[in-house]
Image (cartoon, rainbow, N blue to C red; front, side, top):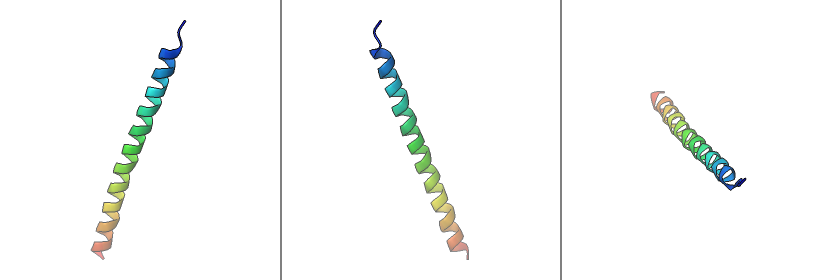
Length: 43
């Protein structure tokens, strides 16, 4: 039984999850920076 298909799929899922988490974190950071900037301008 060849195990390379499972190894490749595991790496692909891990890479996709890491990229998705990085994008989600980047978007959350941008939203938090915009909110902080709005608070700074409000005062």
